[in-house]
Image (cartoon, rainbow, N blue to C red; front, side, top):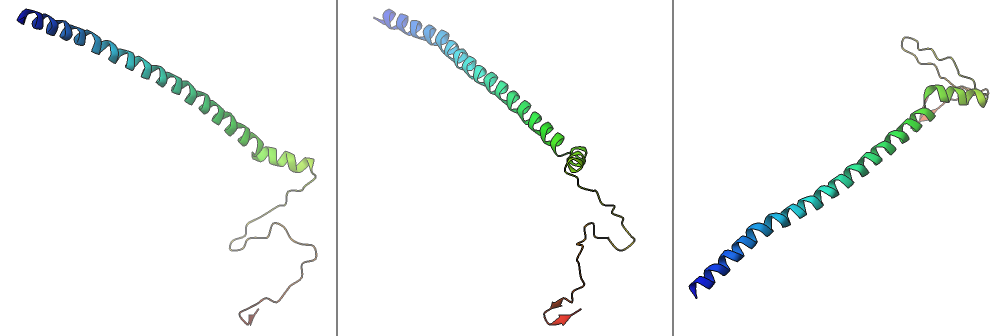
Length: 107
């Protein structure tokens, strides 16, 4: 009787010793495959992000804005900065001087 218990115990211990690492390796391989899939997905998303960024910079760069202004017949105004004054880049043709009153104090 003792021999049969001993053999069953030895059989179970060998089974556990062999099966646990196999099961762990299978789980590790599954996780590794998921990581590889996520890496490829991240790579694809990074490429899409870079292409969108490039399209945006091409579309809204200074040269494209100047070209768009030329096609729509806009004129770039000359703006110069004086020592303590900034000139207004766009002025209305019919701009008149108005007296502005703020809280009862007029200019």
